[in-house]
Every structure is written in structure tokens, then in C-alpha cells.
Image (tube, rainbow, N blue to C red; front, side, top):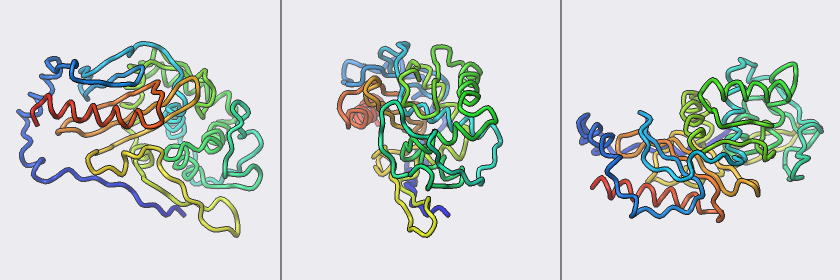
Length: 287
């Protein structure tokens, strides 16, 4: 059973009352007039767009680069599209070990077992790599190889023409995409209520071991607990080759906005860039 405390942020009632349709259209029409000279972002690649596909900010947005655990959004999409039983218990096996970066995990091989739904939760919320690997291994009869093929088919279907996927975790630097393609991925992932819920859950407790207590996991994006942000979807990622990455679907001033920040050097740079972006949009729109 999952016990979780979710960050639920409700926009101030006064904002909802004051925001009219004409204001929303004015905001959408004004993106091209925003002065990016006043915006200092430190991420190497940036793509920010609204739900109509209108670009707000872009930098190296078509450069293909490793995307680390942002990959797990596609993992979740493929799992959910497959129709596989989310309540089926899955045991973590030796095949789920990280043999690329040799990262550690509290989810122990041969001992940990969780329902597929909870593996999906901790893979999306806390970026648990063994959970993602187990999802890729068990979704199709053909195992991980069939799963990765399905990831790449889905990428083509949603127009991610500059992308490729190599595993279910993002640990393989062969998982690559452009920032513009990741806007497409975030938009598609946002169509799945369970992905929206799990990626914006602040923390959760699961019980992977018989006879043991609950094990806590936390969201890797601190913005889920920030009342200034209305997050609808979120995913972080990091490997050496990718730098720090963050993608989000957010509500901002009555508009749905997709934010992709890739290749940051500092651990908190994506969060800093996100806050600078929010303040810049607010100031430029005079809101």
C-alpha cells in the first residue's frame, strides 16, 4: 500500500477570477515581443513553449544530447500504453543492476518486490533506476530489447525525430534527444493522469521487503514543494554526459507552459533557471 503526501498547489482564487479569455489570448500573442536580453539562463540547451506550440524561449533547442533520467517519462508512457497489470508484483533481479555506472540502490536484488504501480511511482518521483529497469524487463515477453524498441516507435509516433532511446533508465548515454523533442515528450506524458500524479508527488512510502517497515522516497525536484509553482508534471535527470536536466509542465499566469532545461553544470542550476524564467515572464507581461 502506498502512503504519500502530495504537493497540491491551487492557484489563488483571485487570479482565477481576474484571468479572462481575452487576457489569456493576449499573453499567447505576446510571446514574440518578450525581451530575452533580460533573461539569463545557465542551462546549455533550453526550449520553452506554450500549449499551442508557440515558442517562448529557445537556446540550442535542436542540438541532440544525452537526456539521462528524462528517459523515464518515455518508460512510463510505454508501460501504460501496453496495458500491463499495474498491480502485478515484480521482484528485482540481477538483470536490474546498474552495470553502466554501478550506482547503488536501496531496492535490493533478489529480495525487493513491489507492485508494478509502485515501481512506476518511485521511478518517476525519485528516479529509482532499478525500478525503471524492472519495468523495462517485465512489460513485454521480449524483455528489455522489445521495450526499448517500443520506446523508439513511440518517439517516432509523437514526432521526436531527433531522438533515440537505449534503455529504460536513462543511465545509458545513448538515450538522446533535442530540447525541442523533449517538449513533445512532456506534452505527450502530460496526457497520462498517472504520470502527472506520480511526477508531482512530493514523497511516498513503499514496503519492498516482507516483514520490514516502510521505505521512504522523495521527489528529485524541490519545486514540487514550492508554493510559487503550479506543477502538472516534472522530471529531473543527471549523468555526467548530460549534465543536470529538468523538464516540467506548469501552469503560469493562466497558461500551460512546457519547460525543458538541459546540460546544467550546478546541481541547483535547473531550479535557479526555472525561477529566473518564471520571474522574467511575470515581469515582461507586467503581471
